[in-house]
Structure formats: C-alpha cells, structure tokens
Image (cartoon, rainbow, N blue to C red; front, side):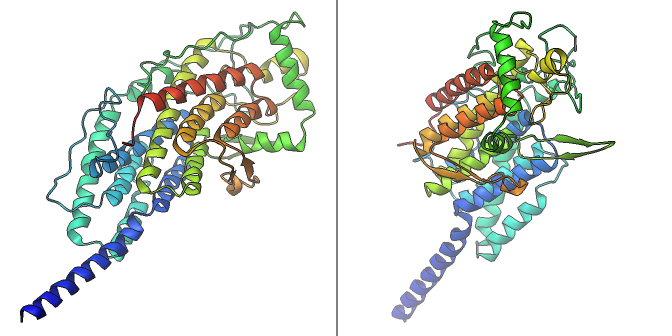
Length: 442
C-alpha cells in the first residue's frame, strides 16, 4: 500500500511538473514580451500619439513590467526604486503565494499601457488573449489569480507615481507664441500646425536631474546676408543636397522618417498617413537585439526598460533645447530667401529645428543597447516593411543611430550641425542612463 501511494505521489508530481513546464513555455517566452511591446506600439501609431508622448507610454509600461521581474527574481534584478530617486519601493509579493512573475510582468505592462494611452481600454482585448494563452497552457488557477492580483498591485503603484511627472499640468500650459522674427521657428506647410508640446522640457525626467542637466551649445546665428556665414552655408547644403538626392539617400530618409502623422495633399484632396514614432522605431530595434542575442525573458524586459528610459529622458532634454533655441527650419528659410517652390523630401514636423530629436534619441537608445547586447552586432531592421519601405542592414546600433541623424539632412528638415550636436547629446544621455541604472545584478 505504501509503495502504491509512493508511486501515485511520484506520478502526481511528474504530471504537475509537466503541466507547469507546459504553461511556462508560453508565459516565459521572451517572444511574447516582444509581441506585447509591439502591440502597444501599434496602438500608439493607430491613435496618433506624438513622439514625446509615445516615449512616456513606453517608459511607464516597461518600468511596470520590469518591477514585477525584479520583485520575482531579486537575486538577478535590482528594483529601479532608489535608482530613480522619486520612485518609491514597489509593494513586495506575498512569499506564500505562487506567482508566475513573467505572466504578471506582461499583464502589468498592459495595465499601465492601457491607462496611459487612449481610447481607454485599447489593450483589453489583447489582455484577454494573454490570459487565455495562460489558461489554455494549463496554468493552475491559484497561480493565475495570484499573478493577476500582483500585476495590478505593481501597475497601480507605477500609475500613481506617473501622475506626478507634470504631464497633466502641461496639458493646460500656454501655447507657443509665433513671431515673424528672422531665425525663429514658424509653422510649416502643408499643415501649418501649431508648435508641438512646447512645455515638454518641464516633464519630470527619470534619470536626468533636470531637462537642462546636459547643456547644448548655441546653434549658429541666423545670417542669410553673408554667404560666408556658417548659417548660410548650412542652408545651401540642405538645399543642394535635397535637389540631388541619390536613391540610397532617399531610402535612408524614408526609412528613418518615422512621421507619426503626415498630411498628404493632392490637389484639393488631403489624407493622413501614419508610421511609428522615432521612439517606437527604437522599441522595435530593442526587440531585434533581444532576438539576435537570444536573450531570456528577464534580460529582454530589462533591455526594453532601460532603452525606454533613455528615450524618455532624451526627448525631455531635446525638447528643452528646441524651445530654448527656437531655430527656424530649412524649409522656411529656403522658400523665403532662395526658392519659394522648394520643398523638403520628407515633411517638416511642427517644432523648432535645433537640435535634431531623432539624432538625440537614436544615439541615447544606441548607447543603452550597445551596453546591453554588445557592439558590432550586425542586424537587419525590417521595422518599416509594413509601411512599404525596404529593410536596412547595420553593423551596429551606433551605426544605425548615426544614419538616423544624417537621414534628417537628406530629408531636408535639419541642418547638419543640429544632427551632429544631437548625436553627441544623445550619447551623453545614454551614457548617463547606463552609469546610473544597474538593473541586472552580476
């Protein structure tokens, strides 16, 4: 009889272990996290979130996911509380409750992602799909319920913290004042949209002490009267280059365009087209890095999180510099002084020229990804394929960032100096993020 009970107990244990292994193959698969981030990216695109706001969506959602992972595996991952000075300690999980922390991480990402995007409930259908995957794979009901419960606890904590970042206050802040002074930014065709998020530099950063912590040199002064001035030469370079673009240069400009909302005007008709924002593009690249390096679930979450933090702070710093300099776009100068019919290859976005946002955020993200996955990683980026743009191959993340910066000159929306300085600025931000934040415990 005892022998029978022993055999029965062993059989039950083996069956339980097999079932556990079955559902964990689903919930612990890093591809599921990459898919989840892409889902949020799609929602951001569909609902036309501007690049700076999109970076906020990615940062808080990823931080929520990461804090769940850190709580579940404190031997290998360090909480961001205490590293991001204004983030308080996240509630600890109940040690007596079985929790699938990877599954809870996915859910926490979605809860926060659902709360910081609109329309409300955009991710609910996807959350239902995640839950069904776990249940169908055999996750025990107690582990399922405990995981859902803890994901909500962490998400609630992160959302309460996110609401103190000054975002709500900037919704009612004063608008940008447009003047016709030479050298100052004014709206550009075809939308002639008002300045985008002129107060974004007032948003609370995550790692930077303030938006102004990393200063940027002043741009060359406006001077179209002197053909030997730095400004005049910069304008001529943009026009000359735009008038004689090669197919390769056009491909670079299209690939990194990342215009979240482009207004197309054909005769009397107009329609909008959308792409990933620059931050969304780099979220995709973080996923590519994770896939190439065959990173496990925790490493994948950490990579997305640190990259999203770098993007968030890079946008805050960049926008502070932009609205401090208020520099005029090439299109405005060229059409006013040189050729009234001239248009850039890609559409000019509605905010000041200096410094290049894509240069800053790309360089910041590239530094984080290089520290995470290594340098000289050759990869093909097919992020733009869904928009009909062929993939491009890069020899490293830094190589991609440098091309992203230069693409803005080819596109006709930036002077070269704004891209060079922007890249330097972004590298400094990326370095600061990797120096201050220690996510993985070695």
